[in-house]
Image 1 (spheres, rainbow, N blue to C red):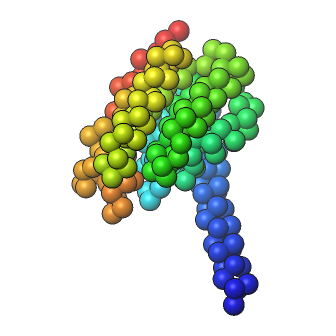
Image 2 (cartoon, rainbow, N blue to C red; image 1 turned 120 degrees about the vertical axis):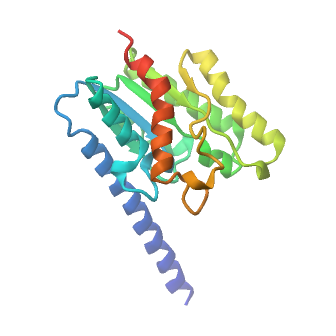
Length: 222
């Protein structure tokens, strides 16, 4: 009986992992379909970028690609969002992403660290490592860091220290900060799915518009 339960949970994990990896692979391939794009914008993120609960074409990275095409900007979006990823998991798969040129990177990781109550220093260290490793491989890369906030039940001290990580990294690394990725979306039921964590289709549109206000000036730089 115990062996049967163990097999069930192993099989469940493999199915969920496979689904997440297939979504990541499809996102990467679909975003590369624009033959007119000449520069690469990689979104390294978790379920908020992967489009958990919505069609991948409705997730905010795909909408950013639509904005780029609309404005005639020669960029290709590579959606490297994987549901459930922590900063450590993102760092582990970074080298694979860096095999091809990266001209700009949106770093959207950390929410799962915070929700799991992981050590703050580990989160900061992992994000710093992503920035350092990306710049070492592609020195001219533009980096945009997406800040995140936590629900009140995590405790005031932990919440405040967590939120301070993102502006501190911005100041020390000369990267562009999006103060809060879910500005105007987080905590608003009408823009989120039933779990009140992941944006719905309308929420993703609002996230895309918010990200665009910070991203467009960066991509327009020479």
